[in-house]
Amino acid sequence: MITLYRILKFGLLNFWRNWILSSASVVVLAISILVISLFMAFNFFLQKAIESINQKVDVIVYFKDKTPEDEILDLEDELKTLVEVKDVEYISKEKALEKWLSQTENEALRKIISEEENPLPRSLEIKLTSAEYTPKIIDFLNKEEYKDKILKIRYNRMVVEKIISYSKAVRKVGIILSTIFVVISFYVVLNTLRLAIYSRKDEIEIMKLVGATPSYIVMPFVVEALIVGFLSAVIAFIFVIFGTNYAIKLILPREILEELSFLVKGLSLGSAKIFGLQVLLGVSIGVICSLIGVKRYLKS
Amino acid sequence: MEKKPIVKVRGLTKIYPPNIVALKDVNFDLYDGEFVCLIGPSGAGKSTLIRLMISEEKPTRGHIFVAGRDITTLLPREIPYYRRRVGVVFQDFKLLSKRTVYENVAFALEVSDATLKEIREKVPFILQIVGLEDRANHFPETLSGGEKQRVAIARAIINGPKLLIADEPTGNLDPKTSWEIINLLLEINKRGTMIFLATHNKDIVDKLGKRVIVLEKGSVISTTRKTYYL
Image (tube, rainbow over all chains, first blue to last red; front, top):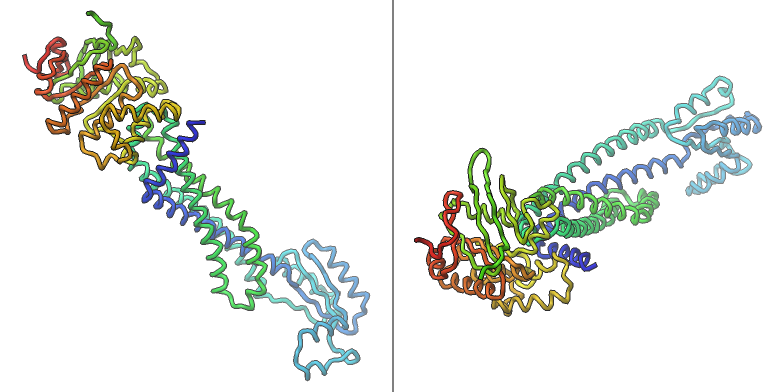
């Protein structure tokens, strides 16, 4: 108990009295954690973006007016059995009108279409489990048997294809860069702490001469590393939360921002998790590095 | 009056690779309560002998018995416990620069699991013996050389060792301060601690008139003289 108290006391004292090297270690570690968290946040952001795009209607099939309603409903049922399809919604003429009116503000245009005079086609709005399946569904709908029933198939090929290729590439690059940064930050922190410990090799020497056991010598360094790790995580966290919010507002126009507000919310909701991860990252890098650093001076 | 030896050095030899002989078959005894000087020119092996005596290094051959225990066979985990029972003072003081005088002295007690009560009682008492009670909250860098050495001595004796080894404790001090330190060592000796003082200060050795062990080229050439030169 008394030993634990002394170890904590000396850890804190050492941190305080070596404040220059302590803060250098904190800054380096904070930057490392920040970089890693930014990659994590970016991945999170991207994943959410992909999810939100997947939420949207991927393919709309418009039907000719002569096609009987039960055939459309049959197709709807058939589409629903496909694994690639998440949801299908049938839009009747009335619904199409309703939608059109809600989206159109121009009075003159509004008057062109009425319930009696409704040229809007019926349609099926298809949501896919993933945007990558779009070409598959298009092929399915382009079959000979549907040719004379379907008026038009609408989808945004460019967007779909881009999203698919981007999301795969970005995820790969993100993982590779994150790994590289973990390794780099580990080395930088290891060397900063080594420097901090090297500057105190005399102290370690004296402790040994006075009869301190190795664990008594090491533990205050571990306590210091814990403090360094925790403080770095706090700093990195503040930067991630305020930084990303600011960056999002800066980069994205207001309209898109409103649409993406769930992303910002999600980021804040996930903040406890992010903070936990950062502390874990900071503390473990700090402790591992300080143990490696102090070990060589303990051998007599 | 014949006292029993607390240190017995037998056939002590230290050879550094490849073939530098630092100590060659050294034998001597140190008796309880004695004040003994270790003299010899630079490179005679004084520092090597002291490093072996505080178990910082292992000898190539031979044994050192301290209070009956052969310290050349100590296991690494036993060494810290041995060092707590032997006080050591160095020429360069070896104080913890980031700790106050009080903390430096208390540190030797803390590593030996002393209670807070013991520390609060012993540290001021020892600081009073070495005459530093009003410097307790100073950091080493604000002290003079003599004061620093007093702190080192306070730290060395706080665990009540039977043996205090002093390696050139006056090497960095002016003559007047040196004598203050020697007088402090004499005072500690009177309280019952055996002092083993390595020095090449002729003046001190001659005026002390204590038993002298003379090392030359790694060998002991006398263990009975009382002066630096015959």
